[in-house]
Image (cartoon, rainbow, N blue to C red):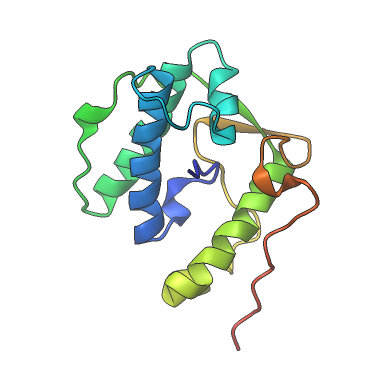
Length: 155
């Protein structure tokens, strides 16, 4: 499960559809409707806030809006609570880590999207998050000294 902290506009087609499915699964977990994934590290930040269901709902709302901008039809009615007033902190190091991770994925999956993305130096976060100083989050699986491979520049 990967609930990207990056703005959904950066995700390629596969990434956007995957984050929608995984966000819906996260919502199901937070509602207590599944036995699997209950301890998944990506859910730590949602559980840490006062209203986890509103937070995941706001997250999914933005993913759905990006899908609609692209002409996809995600079912907005699957979002259980989507109040946008919730904002979660996001460490700058985590945002950078995810950006490198996304570039590495997109480089092989969608070379055209990769060429578009690699021109960016400061990616925007998902609107649910506000960027704060700091490194990679403790819950990030790659945080123990591992970094995603830096994609090579295409010539």
